[in-house]
Image (cartoon, rainbow, N blue to C red; front, side):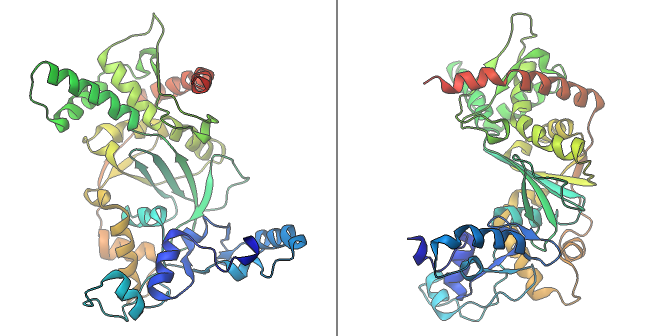
Length: 379
């Protein structure tokens, strides 16, 4: 079927095409299809040429750029809602054609906008059932890394993305076990209270979790090279086995893989950041997930009230930038001055003892990965 391909796009690009008729894509989403040249704000000409040369013997009737969507940056004209598109969104006919539509972006780009993390030296961490970090770089990395994806902000700045398949799913399963125990005792269950008490008791544990280890791999984890998942809790007879250390190791495990990926950026590439914003379920219990993540990546972490609004709000802000940017501001300035207006959220700085403890924990964690590898092969 490859010879018959007429158009290649992402889910966001497909929906945009259906409602506007335009075969375009926001630069952030486009960077996930093919590397972007930060000078031209277009697909890398070198990569396009390499691809075309590799498939030349097939003698297809198209070149790569013939089937890729046009790349657009935030604020550029991406078409308007067509009569056909309005009917697809609203069969009642109330929604009228002609509404301007901004360049389409996926959840990575909209997440950056929703957390006001599009300026260089800023970043955001999404931590829920899976997790990822996006750090906006001042310059390209010195070389490619298998565990780091290079994408861009919706206005074209290079972004280093570390994506982890697993985050809080295993932790949530353990919390549910405590819920079942509470039900067994006949005590009324309030899940917010259970999470709050268990998360906060974790902060009283040893900074290195007393030697306890947890691997939260519900599924495989490419960053650490584990193909299949098998959640594991590991301890030796001499470790300090307490509820506080038990909960702390599961919190550490939730961002352990994220730390391994980001250590490359901060330690090897010497990337500098001024602000990282956290959003997602890990941060719901005030102060705890923030403190753990701050220790993991040794950086201040901010959490905003609006961060939970996520991608739908982020794309709405990009729509607003398209139609309300009368001053012709950059996307970062528009967000700073018109949306967030000084709201940097509540910031927690890393505690030196926590940082040292997490570093000790992660060395144990890496040394124990063969245990997880062996367990994952066991069916």
